[in-house]
Length: 283
Image (cartoon, rainbow, N blue to C red):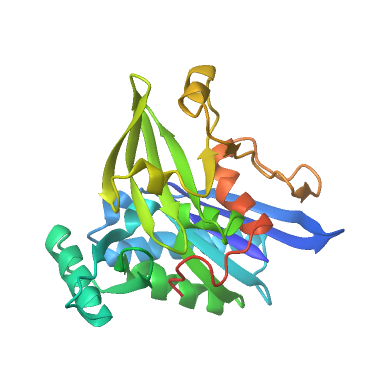
């Protein structure tokens, strides 16, 4: 099994097998990209060139032939909305409204694909997200050409849904003045920014609910190391602080020193969780 993590500045690739009831990491590759993908957003051909060059360098370290491949892309590469379905609306109406909302908020001329999920909770809603075909189609084709089997692609944060698919989770990414959060459950998806001010959580939702109760449902996962001050923010809540490669055995000294702890969180979630059929799949 292989996890390919595409970031703005590098490609990370981890390969593992199952041994003794747990994943055993057998190969690892980390390649810095010559140019930032974000700076190339208007040039499809340049992005494809940079990604293909990076993948061929990775292939020198890790053969893809016959391997199942999972891929994650940065959260910011996915433009998302959630819209409520009113009593006089069909699910298809909700889908059309969500696509219209994305197009209004983020104009985009290059080819893209839309993915979504409808929710039947207390409030019916439709979640939709847009992804450039550079990542959905081109990466899939590249993996197939390398002999791999592309099984799943999703956003970085959606990988954490694999750790608690039944009850859902909210993952908190540390920022300088607060947190970026992503909530995934069978009832809804939410994301936004959060700060802890004067003993209370203040949410600034980008997609979904403003309710603390909704955002703090399920398992709370912190992707980063909390200081004692930040730990106090979560007083009264049970949290899981991600530890890179927790629950995974590593064969030898294969992790390069330049790889950061946070670079390994999504690999840890995918290798130890259940992602297929849980999070949205861009493949």
